[in-house]
Length: 152
Image (cartoon, rainbow, N blue to C red; front, side):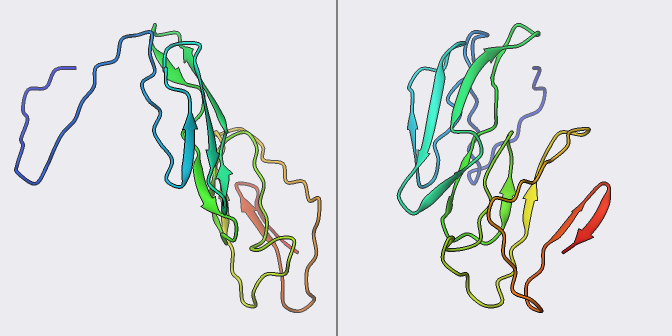
């Protein structure tokens, strides 16, 4: 990378790291979570878990892999920790679990939860309902996507 112009004011701090091609660098720490793994070279793995009261959103295990450009990168994005009673959010990764707030107990009245599931273009997202109950005249489920929307 060639940097021809660089401005720095007293309000900004710029940090950069040059990584050798055999390392991925630290993928990052989780707010309200724990990182297990302290080496970040090709073949190394980092495992994440969340503190009590939080659920992991994304992949718990990341692997540092070599790619075709002779560089290294993590196979999945950094996960996040969300509260157990979260009502909505954005999910990434190959799989995940969506629950209503306080599941298996009842959620509060007027809960309006919107979950966004991100996938690569061309991928199909499969929703499998293992426990599903709606209160007639009050609750509904709406699924939207590139194929239009469905309402239950």
